[in-house]
Length: 160
Length: 191
Image (cartoon, each protein chain N blue to C red):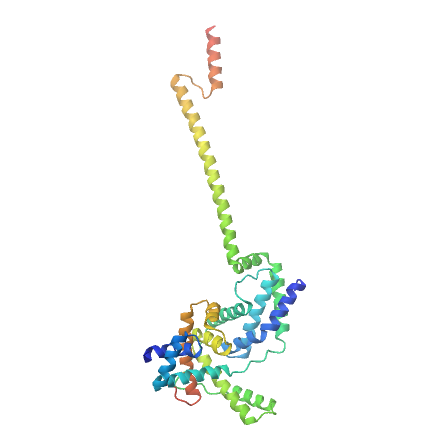
């Protein structure tokens, strides 16, 4: 293992985040290379210095303030339903996504159905029109069967 | 708080994690007031989410809280218009306030050897100052690893990045820190 590679993974070696084989190789390299050994010692010391930092004491009223603030937040959420919905969408991203997907799906189905209905109506009216045009061609000046019958009745009466 | 179940869960979370979360917030922000604001906001968010039935995460509570702290800290950094620039050639020296704090710590801890107490406190202040000087991207993984003792895998989950990124950030952060600490502690740490 060369110095460049060793220096790159020294921190991982210190944190025991390298595999056993690499750890043995680094250990052997450190025994031979004073430059890498020095860097290893500096990094190890830095880790130890950070590790020696004491745990900071909580402010005396910390828990009380957290409760007070969360009560305030909950009150404001319950009074503002819009922000509640927005929060719901922000927090539950996966569920919000699923909800939106369902809404889009239903809307899509509704759209397709209404398109199909309007298409059927179009076909119906087109049929009616073609029937009408056919009857016009035949010489009857009426729109439907009823009016044809009416016209033919009138015609027969006039003949009599 | 709504029901007893939720109340006990909130109590459990606060008792278990408040000190740890405050600790990490303190070393991340470098000051008591920001740490208080940051950790308070993180807990308020969790409690509000639990009480409104919106708490929804795959992460363990501890990791979730650290992730919140990290996000809130990034928000604070974005909001801050003034940035503190410290020269590496002229390390930050102690202010009067810091000296007073040390003196106060010394007086309140009369049972210990004053010399040891003050030396320890100065050293802590220097480490804190060095931590403040390294870029935020490196600071969080270094704190999580060296102060809190998380594994690279856990850090990668908290920070939502690959283990390779964590590895690189910890190494670079530690190198950066070694250099600054070397200067602050009067050593020569050539890396």
